Structure formats: C-alpha cells, structure tokens
Length: 59
Image (cartoon, rainbow, N blue to C red; front, side, top):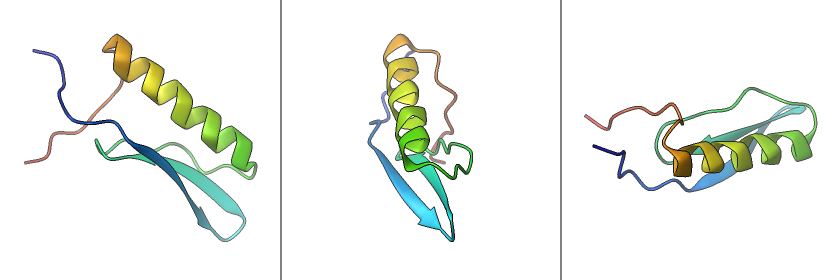
C-alpha cells in the first residue's frame, strides 16, 4: 500500500548549515547552500510522488 503520509517540506538552519525536512520524517543532509537544501526537498517530493522516497512510520 502506498505511503499516505503528507509530504510537506521545509528548511531549517543551524549555524551556517541548512537542512531540508519533511513531515513524513525524512531529513536531508546539512548543506552550506540554502538553494541546495531546497533542491533536496524538491527531489524528495518528486520521489514521494513516484513512491520511491524513504520514509519513517509514525508509530
């Protein structure tokens, strides 16, 4: 059965690093470039639509 968890991404900053995160529990790597973190988030959404995104269950 496909993952029905909503995929809403955002970015967070910690010091000079920026990371993308998703409500499904996915988290991208820390990046120095905000634009790269946003690209990571966009790729996650594409993967989620295709059903290939890694996700964590909300138990």
